[in-house]
Figure (cartoon, rainbow, N blue to C red):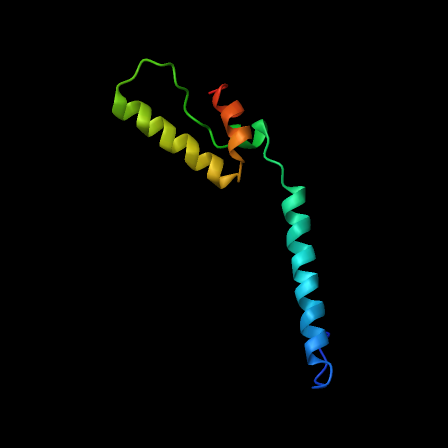
Length: 85
């Protein structure tokens, strides 16, 4: 924000401009990020074969959900990715 001027008459305008600039920058990052299966697989998720006790299956679910949080994957897409583990 090096472009700010020390003019008290325009400080509100500058703050508003800076706020809009920050929102635009954050929105473009959100739109650009789309989690993919490749991104998910880079985290080396463990496979689940259905032959586990409750503790092992709960651990698998927690580890897998942690990966989804890291790659900011929406719930509807994560359920599809769960099928490939």
